Image 1 (cartoon, rainbow, N blue to C red):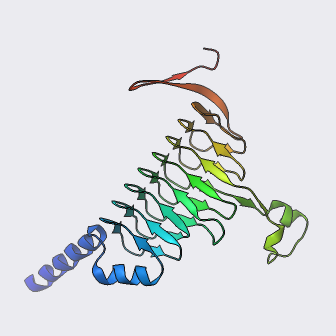
Image 2 (image 1 turned 45 degrees about the vertical axis):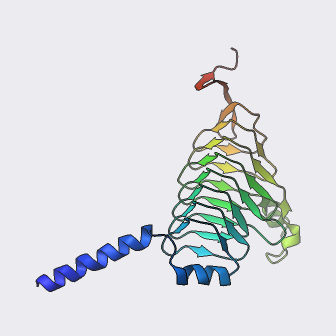
Length: 221
């Protein structure tokens, strides 16, 4: 009985260590064989899948059950549980340094996607899309006809905070030092130093930063 309890505790300890330890040598070798380039002090948690064209900087955390393909991730960033980041051969997704991608986010980069430094994308379930199949669907074009999909790049500039369950449409640029409120749909560019929200998103506040002080001011001020 005591031996069984000890065995279960030991198994649990190693499971927890497996989620937190740096990448072991054999696992790092497999990632290198799959074309992934991994920096120093990188933590890849259980069941994360690194596809082709993946470049990870130093001191990065990759959460469990993530899927990465054709993406460059800057130093000191964190990709949370269940995130999907899908670039393509022609357009590699770029994620900056000190950037956080929250749980279950989907970043699709067919049309080109760039996420800056010090960007925080909250969880859950933010969707950033660089293509749409709306017109393909409405015109009754075959699903296999990828050339019928409309694509446009998305850029998220530095120091941007994006709330949970936000959807960002193709062709949008989100300006630096901006805030997108949760549950918003962004289909137009967001100016720098702006707070936007709603469906579709519209201006709510101006953001004023003076030294360490941040203020959200009414549009009339």
